Length: 207
Image (cartoon, rainbow, N blue to C red):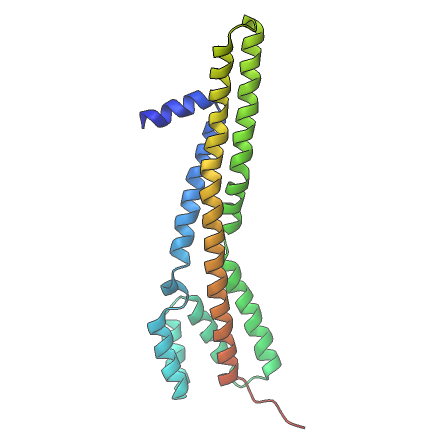
């Protein structure tokens, strides 16, 4: 803890927004890790139970079971059961709109995490530039013969760049991983919607 305080003091005021970025990034990652758990989006026990009921054409029981769960899959199933017997075009359009809402919820806050990853190195660069300006001003005021003072000033100025990168790199990697996870779950929700349409939409008229 003392080392962290010392680094912040040596790096200057820019270290404070970088620290805030790191805390915000950590909070966003933890929130998305919780939100993107399969059990909160596509719980297998729930899906297995609903599939069995749909295959048995026990639609009332399937609707009741779906209402007792608040996952994304349950919301899509509830909607599909309400649309049962509708034309495929209407069924597909309504389900796609609902799917887009669910996909947007899955990727929520990932834009803020990407912002943290983007702004952190820029803050670090700002701190470095500001620190080097201060170092050169000190050299100018005391004369150009003190190379140790210049080296020390530059070293402290570069702390903010290092700090910014230490925040940005993990944030960028985790953003990519979480986005991939959200896209994978979105694809599974799309497959679920297609299966529901095949099972519940009215057959297309021939001729």
